[in-house]
Image 1 (cartoon, one colour):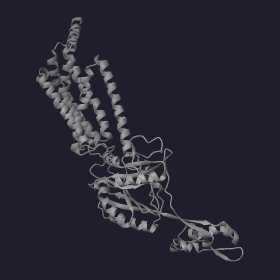
Image 2 (spheres, rainbow, N blue to C red):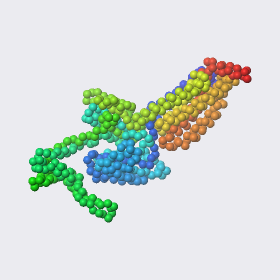
Image 3 (cartoon, helix red, strand yellow):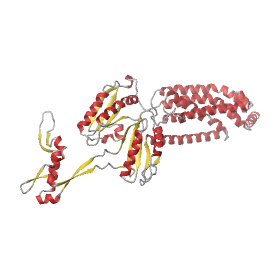
Image 4 (cartoon, rainbow, N blue to C red):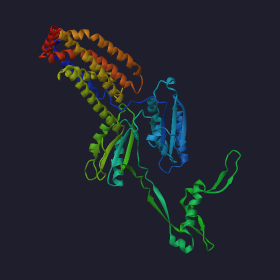
Length: 543
């Protein structure tokens, strides 16, 4: 410590060493060794498997696919049971509310609710189990001609999916074409899985239009023709019977067989009674056209949009890195007129007159949370600086007191790397919370130095003694923080908070013991030290 105070070369070597440590620590984020994410994956007791066949698939086919997947899941050791819902939505849960799964009431969709063993009875976390079963489920889905999504209950962000690309454009054709291109990029990006979009499979619909002129010549009312065509297909209730096993009468519904209902010729061959006493087939009174099925129109903030969605499963399970990889591919994607796709990261385009794409999903929540936390941290630093200026009556002393705050990153970021943890919102909260403890230690050092200066001690001796004498209470404070935070270390959500508090406090304590006295020495040797000595001498004389 003495050489750092008396020798300029030692001081600058120390500052260079600290700067190199800080630069190397922050570089861990840049090279991807420390990954940034909104919240880590929690260890839940369940996850869902969503099965989607092409629109128009019979319920029986969907049910068979879901049963094959349920049979495989039953062989997974950590799975306690599987609840299967085909053609209907599963009971309401968080995903059902946020991702609108409660609307999945269609014959081509199924929902498997996978319940896991209690946490203390299994070694693997729910996220690792979901990653492990996904390849086998995808293989079953490919064989059956369907799509599958393994959906975990998110720990916090209420988003439509982990990765969401919103495609805007002037016409439905343009939006759908761009969305297909974007989906193709999703499919070629490593780590992006469970890819789907808000478009339906392209298929035709049969439109039967009644020729009212022909029906009028035959004396057949339009309502009678419509009833004859729709009734046998949808079924008509003809009676009710009392069944011993039922509380209420059971309706008896008459309708065509499944094969006849699926046959256009059979439906058009149905006959309707004419008032003149003859029967006329529906086919002679109707015009039959085959037209493309229109795509659903989805709007967000009154603007038409097509969603392309996906999840992440790989080394970098954070949308920040997948979006960066996709942005490079989108740079090379051109529209038919040669123009590129305008992209938005945080705000949606004002109109849909031009082709544009906005990133949404977990990225939007991540950006907003870290932005707000950053603003809050800046406000906290400003308030601390105001308090310190008012207490020490100096605009330069706060520089020495606030210096250890960024030095805590030297412990925080390598700590996340060592534990293999994401730098999350809770990590940022721990960084902000630790700043108050670190500033308290700095104030202890500076206050001790100024106390010794008022007692007549030289500046060099005062800063050296402060680093020695005050190190013990600083070390005890750091030990208390480490012990108190250790209880959160193995919690999936609050692990980042524990790492930031523990490692940040250790690094700041070790470095601030040297950095704060040395920086204060550089600040006070210009005249403040002499002022404090004179102030102490005057107080002693007047006393």
